[in-house]
Image (cartoon, rainbow, N blue to C red; front, side):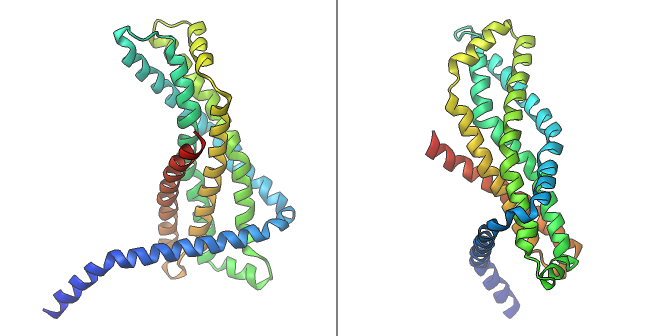
Length: 266
């Protein structure tokens, strides 16, 4: 009887415990980011590491960004063509729809979500492994600042490279929509470009790049936080939990940021 009551009591308290742990995690994340911003003055000391991470985050991610964008733009064009079967809407509107969808939403969001799985998980696993194997403790014992050495170069690299990846995604997303529209609809290239130009606003492109800056910071900072505070008593299991948490939390953060930025900037 006592065990059943204790189990019920724990079940009732579990939401509160989860809330407390969430606030503790937010507090530690903010503390880590404050330390990171204070170490920005030392960015030049780790310029080589920053360039290396820029290559890993940006250049090596271009193929998967291109592939994702091509199919995203293509399916947007096909779905728009499906809606236009009634004949009430001119076919050249497809160009405008593809352009707006890619610039405002598809390119920034899909790039961020893909990079969460590719880069965020990698960063969390790398730093988490260093924590479990006590490499971070060794850096501290040698008077190295682990935040400046491990976290700052990755965040700077992501902030620099994410807008570039979004530009690549914009170009290939629109190109994928162009190819799909020409091949599936009675639409000429001139008509597609007409729709694209008639709906285009320069702010749409800038808006996507601004989202890239925020998404890049969010993904890498969350991944670094999860890896940096990996539980050392869990071994490889702890690294796996940190990697999973990094991907899940980053996806939620991206969706929240997407709504907030759309509300503020559009």
